Length: 107
Image 1: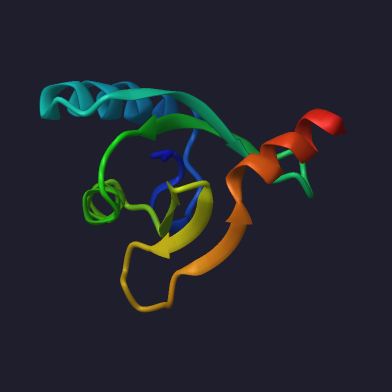
Image 2: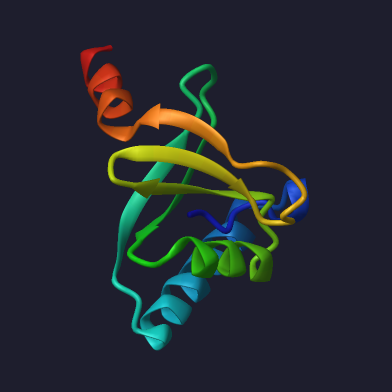
């Protein structure tokens, strides 16, 4: 999960960096195990640093809402799903997480 560019907007990189640091601190306060991850769009050069978080889907969506995110990626049993934080859309199945990672390493 990333906390960059809340509510679908764009904010300066410095502000995004501060948000990321504050988010990491919140995850620590909540006792949620997390690790750095950079999300990216393979069709463009856009990427955003964030975290992989060990938590349930509901908690991930709650965090996404709190931090102004439109959606979060949820990975469970190797299946990757895009889940709307607004709850107004059906989750979008994206297939095997392992397959996606392997494809990127092969590029």
